[in-house]
Amino acid sequence: MPDIQRFACLGKQDTIPQDSGAGKAGRARRAKRGGNPIYPRRAFLAFLVLHASQSINAGGIFQHPATFIPSITIEIPVRRPLIIGNWKMNKTASEAAAFIQDLRERVPASPNADVVVAPPFTALESVRNALGPSSWISLGAQNVHWETHGAFTGEVSAPMLRDLGCRYVIVGHSERRTLFGERDESILKKVRAALRHGLSPILCVGESLAERESGRTESVVTAQLDGSLAGLTPQDLATVTIAYEPVWAIGTGRAATTEQAVTVHRSIRLFIETGWDSKTASTIRILYGGSVTPQNIESLLASDAIDGALVGGACLNTDSFATIISVAQTQRD
Ligand code: PGA
Image (cartoon, rainbow, N blue to C red; front, side, top):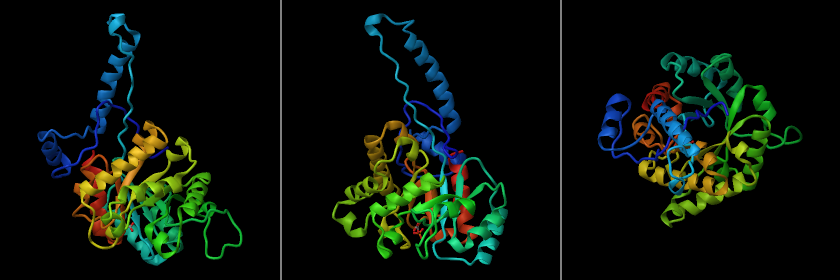
């Protein structure tokens, strides 16, 4: 699980911000109104202190037997933000190389956020070459077939993507579901194929406007998760990322509010906890996607429930994508 920072602390809660702000000023505002978050370094210190006191408690040294309470270690990790640029069907191989060159000049490497670009298949090789061998930006693909090879005209397999340097693959994007008829059953096969061949799947789920308006958001999203993750183990899920992308927000300029996204993210995490376990639920990253821009990224990431973003339109321009990455790099430092 190379991409997940694992720290532990007690009492960390997802928070819905009333306002937002990156850096010190934003943190001061959030602290003033009594909101979490606990930041990585503080979380780690909290863990050390609490772990020490729990160890003493576990030994029962200072307690009368009647009042002895067995210690419970609650592990709540800090999830490093992940920003993924989904290029969709945009940019030729040469445009892609120039774009990456420009992006690398604008954004410095930082351990505070993971960044992935997902160009079309035809540009994967030129993007890999432009990124270089030890880039802090990872390569992802937008789709994968579940078989390794064979008579599947037009398809690309997981070993082929691995061979080109991909580490991630987007699976079940709503455009694939609605325009190409993908169903949870085939999406599950793609998730499994990705995992078998060492690719981290980014599983997309989300409701349509009609589904939201009829109050079915949660049931639609959990049914998609149920169908696309069935039978996976906690070890499998450790390398899966979930992207909540309401269909009505994709490419429309009408992003979900932070509160709307947080509500669904919480129900996704609860679904994972119920279906697997609390450790898996607390470590899996849940991204938001749908009209993410440099203007709304700060508010979205101000909530601990939102672990990053799957960005479409705004990732095609180096200015806007660089800004989104910078916010992710600084907001939870
Ligand atoms: P958008 O696309 O940012 O253009 O809305 C997001 C996506 O489809 O992943």
